Image (cartoon, rainbow over all chains, first blue to last red; front, top):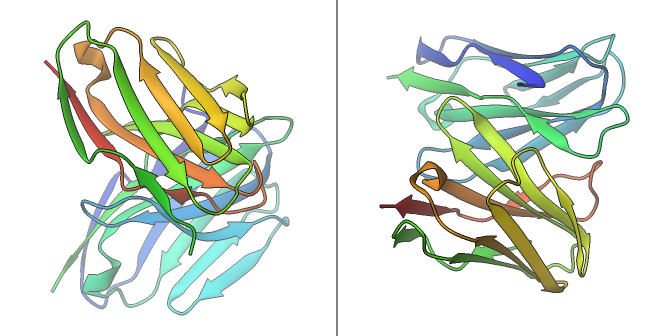
Length: 111
Length: 113
């Protein structure tokens, strides 16, 4: 079964609107990573979160790791057409030996 | 920049053929990974290797094997290709199993007919 769940699967927004994707695990994660995959491209590493409650920012992107280390979110402020793509989270389960990728959220930005 | 190179971008093979997918990385990374990506399922780990000649099964190893004779090269082998193995295959490498971002290759889109 899917170890790491991600919602929504698809999101269409008008350019300038905000966007959020959520990642959830039933098991505590030791850390979580986020990747972006442009259409026709391959996943590109964005960031890693390790600490409980951690918040990191990259320009218009804000990443959060939940207090219980079982969920995470990626928020994009004022989307641009360059934000188009699929965003994946990847969680490393405590005691595990691999990252489990979420199913991804495909973001479409309407100009 | 780390570069992960996959030998083919597109591949069409017949059912029952033995298929080799090659991946080479140029940054002396210890760890290499093979994933398959299918719509609605995300990326699923097939096998990974943490050292030369060492390998570990991922979530979906059935029907696949791997080879890592040199540190920079990690091969995925489909012993007898089936139509259910039609997919996008992504190779990745990383300095550590966790704690470090993975660098992915451009992928090989395999179609088995």
